[in-house]
Structures are given as C-alpha cells and as structure tokens.
Amino acid sequence: MHNRGFAFALASALADLGIDHVCMSPGSRNTPLIAGFAAEPRIKKWVILDERSAGFFALGLARATGVPVALACTSGTAAVEYHPAVVEAGLGDVPLLVLTADRPEELRGRGAPQTIDQISLYGTAVRMFADALAPDEDTAAGAPADIAIDIWAHATAVPPGPVHLNLPFREPLLARDEPVTATVTPLLPPATEEPPDLAGIAGRLEGKRGVIVAGRSNDVDFATACSTLAAALGFPVFADPLSGLRFGAHDLTNVLGYGDRLAAAGALDELAPEVVLRFGPVPTSKPIWQWLEDHPDVDQILIDTQSRDATDSASTVLEIEPTIVAAALGAAVGRRSPVDWLEAWRSLDTRVAQRVDDQVTAAAFPNEPAVARTVAAAAPPHSAITLGSSMPIRDVDAFGGKSDRPLRVFGNRGANGIDGLVSTALGAAAAGLNSVVLLGDVALFHDLNALGTACQLGLPITIVVVNNNGGGIFHFLPQNDPAVLDPAVFETFLATPHRTDFPDLATAFGIESHDVTEASELGSLIAIVPSAPRLIQVSTDRTANVELHRRITRAVRELIR
Image (cartoon, rainbow, N blue to C red; front, side, top):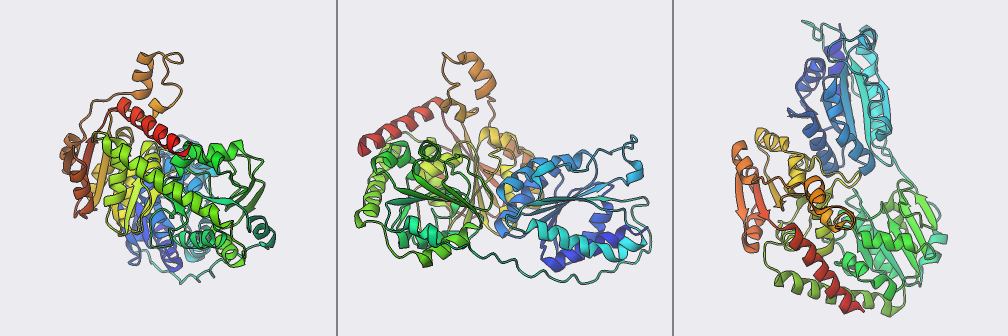
C-alpha cells in the first residue's frame, strides 16, 4: 500500500504552495494524513480533539492570515462536524482545505463501520469537491502535486473559499518500511485582476452628494483604498465593524463612527444622498440596509466579489474585488461633492457621539452598550476582536465609535451563526494576534468545547461573555409582544434562561476567570495581554438593555430632527 507516501507527498506539495498550518483531530482512517503532515516540518500542526471546534479554529486562523488552512479528519460524522465552519467559510470568503478520510469505494454503501456518504458532503458551500482515488503505486508517485495545485487554485480564487477533498484509504492504513518521497510543487503565479473601465462609474459619483457603505472585507488593504477614495469624492463612509475602516492608522476623516445610530434616527432622509457606492455584502446595521432596500430610486452602485445584493436595490452590480475598484476609482475621480456635504455629516456624527456618550455614561454599569464601548476602547493595538453575531457586533457597530488604534475586527457574519465563536478567536490567537472575543451567554454555550481547546493548546485569549441569562436579541424582535406571543412561551422557548455562572465553568476547565461589575475593571483587564486563556463575565439584564437602546435612539432622533 502507498498511503503514507501519498499523504506525505500531498502535505509537502501544500507546503510548497504556501500552507503554514493544518488542524487535525484524532481518528483511525485519517492516520495516513496524520503521518504525512507530521513528517512535513514546514507546516505547523494543531491537534484539536473536537472537529467542530477544529473547523472554526481553522476558519479564524485562515481569516487572520489570509492564507488557506488545512483541516484533516477521519471518516463518518467527524467530517459532518466541519459543516458549520465550512458554511461560514463559503459565505465569508475564507480559504479552507478540508481533507476528509474515507473508506475506499468498494466499502461504501455496504454498512461498513464509520462510513457515511461523504460525496459532495458540503453541497454548494464549497468552491469545489473532489473524490480522490485510493492511493496505489501510480497515484502515490505523481497525483498528489496535481491535486494540491487544483485545490489551492480553487481555494484562493476570487472570491476565496473552502474546498473539499475526500481521500479514501485502504487497509493496512500504514505499511512498514514504506518509502516516503515528494517532489517540489511549482508555485502558481499570483492571480491578478484588472479593474474594468470605471469612467462611467466615476462620472456617476463625481460632484454628487453621495455616501459610501462599506460592508465586510477580509482584505487588510481595503481600508486605505476606501478611505482614500472617500477623501477624493468628499463622501462620508458608513463603515461596518468588519470592513476594517472603523479602527486603524488609515485616514479616518470621512469615516462615521456612529453611522448606525445616524441611520436609525433618520439622517439618511434628512441629508438625502444622490448616489450610494456600496462595497461588499450587506452591512450589519439594519437601519442602513433597510434604507437601501427602501430607496431603489437612489442610484446605488454595488462592488462585490459575488452578486450579493441582499436589498435588491442596486442600480449596478460589479463582480470584482472591492479593493481593486476602490484604488482605481480613487485615482480616477476628479470632482468632489459640494463643500458643505461632508461637513454636515461630520458635524452630525460628532454631535451624535456626544449624545450617545452622555446616555451610556448616565446608565448604570453593567450595561451592554458600555461593555461594547469598553472592549473596543481598551483592546491593545494590533489586537483581533472577534464579535458574536447577535448583540455584540450590533453594539460595537452602534456604540463602538472609531479610533486610530490598529485593531482587526472579525465576526462570523457570512451565515450569521452564533456557534464556534471562541474557536474562531482561538484561530486568531494561533496567528499570533492578541485575541479578544466578545460574545453572549447562549453563544458561549454553543462552543463550550473551545474552553477545553484553549487549555489544551495553551493559547492566550480573553473571553468576554455578556451573561443576561438567555437570548437577549429576541427582546428586540416582534415576537416580544404579548399580543403576538404569550410572555411565558416567549421566555421559555426564545429567551431560554439557563441560570449558569460561567466563572464556575471556567474554573472547571482550569481557566482564570473574573466576574466584573465596574467598567474600569473591565477596561483594565482587557488592556493587559494575557499569557493564558482567561474568561471575564459581565452580567446584565435583558429587559433593561432594551430600554437603554430605546432611550439612546430617542435621544439621537431628537438631536437630528
């Protein structure tokens, strides 16, 4: 048999192409993959017991580095555990190489142990699927390099994303004294993408009263390109926390710190734009994307790697990398908006910032807007902040403002799931970033195994959990209306109180924990880069949180109108 030689040749070919990390979980059928990667010194190996945690760990690592990360697991339901992370990677444009071991073709569909149908297991979530041949004398000698090039090319194309390679192995899984050789894989030339003729687009923007809406971007160069374009146009920027524009050393002059609050209070109607330039997927802010959806009569130009016009309101959609277009337009436009346009938005943003600060400061701590503000303000420079998909990212969007401190903000907003958040943040820590994750109590429940992963790997991470004893976001939805749903049904089946104290769980895992009741204490803890995992619990009240959000919205609306 030639399993070991095939697996080592595959691992070496991936290392030639640029793979730096592989996440592996123990199993029998994937033993050849374990042996192959273990023998390749250029690839760092992360051993993670739980495949679900491993999938999100790899997701966070690939997002932080911008380089594909490999996953390797055994056959059966182990491969299914990767599925949530694969879905998020597919929608979030994150490159993953998912390598699933399998039984050979002759054992499939016959009730063989630990055998499921793994053909196209992840459906349309992956950029490509391939079912390899079981290694023999020929495939062990030549095919791995070709396979590596193929999956690498699909994972790193525009838009990047996950690929699935199913690898059947016959027994004996490893043979004694099997020769292990590998040939150098030729590196692919870097993909280049030329921007289209943008003269027509520039003409629709120049001299207009326009705004830029910047959604999620994984490209670290996007913030500079977009802020430069905004300066050339004289447009304010409504920047999603995941765009990279809200925090950093780039020019923040045109970036609004409180775009969500401005939109919620009706500023886009009071200062009506003539044109909107949109980059990337729909932003987190519901007031912003609802305004876009309600105003198809306004010229909207969407630039994205995929046709993701969730509002169905764009006049023009260009499928191209946003950074390329932003840079090209920045050099092409010649006329700015009227001089009073940008100043009106900047002045309003400044006044809203003060009004929000007054309201949040006046409220008793702990409260959730104050927690979000403190995390964003206290995280050390060059930290990675991973935000939960329910209230945390909305609160940072609404109350986090902007700052010239270089921070990277991550979130699993491709599928908007709440699972895998701690594991994703651990992946960012594995990339060498000071990693802070802000999430809710229900989200932490979905990823408790990650506490074990954190201890096992010894990675420094700060876990800030807002514990409001249930699903706080449901209180903002129409379901939280006695005329719609019985309050007892709402509380039992949607709010789902759990009465869990997370410091107790952290102690059981051997993790340092803190139960914080003062904003200053929270800020002081976050400002210190830890040497080991730690958990900070901040307990809040769900009902009081809704009332505080409403008070802030009313206060800002009074200011604008």
